[in-house]
Every structure is written in C-alpha cells, then in structure tokens.
Image 1 (cartoon, rainbow, N blue to C red):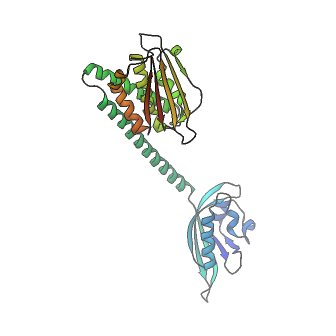
Image 2 (cartoon, rainbow, N blue to C red; image 1 turned 30 degrees about the vertical axis):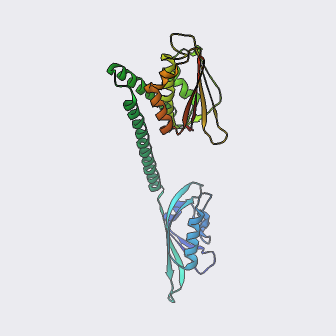
Image 3 (cartoon, rainbow, N blue to C red; image 1 turned 60 degrees about the vertical axis):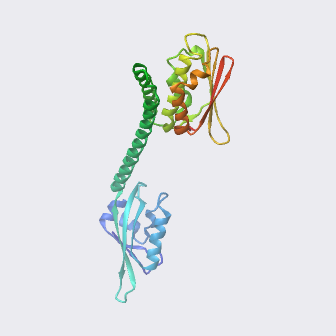
Length: 302
C-alpha cells in the first residue's frame, strides 16, 4: 500500500510499505515524492487512468484494475483501491491506496474465456457438419440400398478428407488449390489442369466446398470427362470477383461431358445445389456445348 499527500497538486507518495516495494521492484527512496503514474506504461488504459484522476480531483475513492509496470519493465494487473483520509476539519488530507496483483486471476479469466470461445466454435462446427451430413442422408438416392450405402460412405469420406485438411492447418483458412486436390487426387491427374491464383477458403466453408468438388468429380468419373469411356479433359479455373469478394470457379469438362439429362436427375446435382445455396451463399450454372460442359460456381467461401 501507499499513502499520497492530497494537499499537494501531484499527490506525491509519502509512505509505501514493503509489500508495495516488493511488488514493484522499487526502493523507497526511488518513489517517495513521486506521483504513482510512474507505474503506468504503453498498455495502461487511458480510460482507467482518467477514472482514477477524476476520483482524486473530486476527493473520492475509486476501485479499478490497471495494467501497471514494475521497475524491470514487466507488467502486472493491479487491482487498485483508493480511499480518502480526512483531517479534523473534514478535508481530504491523504489518499490511501492498496494494490493487489491480480495477474494470475486475469490469466485464468482469459483462459476460461478462450475455452468458452473454443467450445462455442466446436459447437458451431459440429452443427455445420451435422447439417451437411443431414443433407447427404436425406438427398442421397435410397431406392437401391447398396448404392445408397456406397454413395453416403463416399460423401462422408469426402468430409473426412476435408476435416483432415482443416486439422493439419490448425483450422485456419486454406488455399483453394489444396481443398480441390484433397478431393481429386485419386483421379488421373494427367487429365486435369488447375489455375494458379491463391485464394483462401475460410474454415467453415472448406467442408461444404469439398463436398461440392467431390460431387462434381464423381459425376465426371461416372458420366463425363474422367469416365472410362473416353479420354476427356477437366480444367478447373477460379478467380475472386474484384467487386464483392465472391469466388468464381469454372469447372470445364471436354471430350466426354455428361448429358444434360444425366445431371438433371442425379441426386449429386441436388446435393450440390443445396450446398451452394445454403452453405456457400452462391449459385451454379451449367452450359453444354457439343461434347463439353462448363459449370460455373459463384460462391462466398472466403
């Protein structure tokens, strides 16, 4: 604790106990006669300092937490309590100030807040994945039980690959090229070309976008350019829209594009549409030309 003279303009310290000296690292002769503001530094809140100044000027007490600094430059959180001491005439003669180092308590608070944010994030991600899985289960074709089980399994595996990618990147934004490669790497890459511009996909969009890529790739293998019936080519290009930050991706199949009727009735097409509209806040268009198909996605995954 310290005692400051309230009758002098700068409220100089006239007394400091050993606990204060041990806390701050100063010797008594280094602080007596000085205002306590020497404990302040770059991280000290101006609002908190103003609150203390106002109370002292008004001759009132105040309780506030301040980030203060020791003699060696290290910081500590100070729970400051100031009380006026009155003389026989009822005038404020001194201010008594106690300081409690609450740094450890603040760290515990920060840790608890961080854990709470983490739990909320996990809850949000879990709900997002469950919503996608719900779409997979509801929108997959259940007429053929064996085919249904296989399709659901492949789609869940697609989500698993996306989850592994997120985990490897500490759930940070991921370059779209890596997102795509995780879904198409099992197909012959000599038939596939991709553009180069970097575009970061935010974590919550990685799984729905991955499933969209998976569905397009499965369709290309089953009916289109990557099918066993031809030597088609797949080109994947993307660029961000300079106006509003949307991502424009063009998936072009040539030399063996699927027929329109094969896409219209496919359950994969329904899933893609639902994911793009609900999860990625975008749209999809398809353009058939002779034996080629261009699928344009306008989405917001970043």
